[in-house]
Image (cartoon, rainbow, N blue to C red; front, side):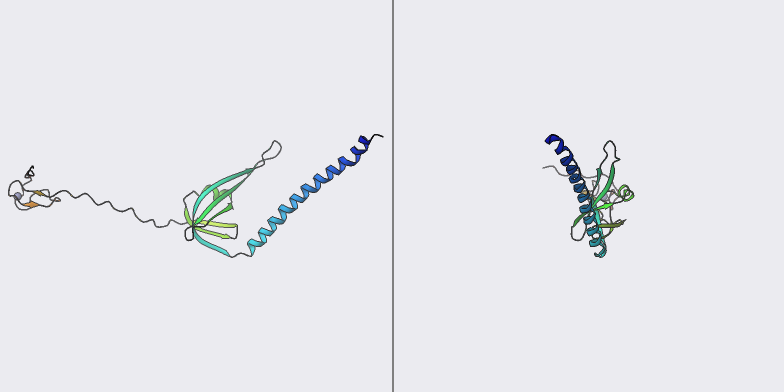
Length: 167
Ligand SMILES: [Zn+2]
């Protein structure tokens, strides 16, 4: 009986047990964190507030040779009032149905996304560019000073314009 042979039968099972404990431990920690967040969210009020979609992102995890990839969908909302940004995990349907820049009412409870209803916010109309005023002109027939909007001289009806005096 060599010492190596002895080690094989004691250390290998110990190593397997240690890995097993580690994996179980990680699963437990993740579960506890999830439960804690769930409980924390339950204690939060359900809030609906005007928001805008800032960014969207996909997160793909897994997808090795023997496992199927799972995709999670995330949207970052920006509240119009306080300028707060917060990312929520959303459903695939909401992810595909909403676009960056959409405005609406976001309902959430803590970190839990409850929904987003698109509302078109009235956007201030673009300022109407003042139409350039046609320059006033002088009637070539009766020398009446005519407003630029007029095409005919209001006094005599002539359309002929007096050429501006050249310097
Ligand atoms: Zn005239």
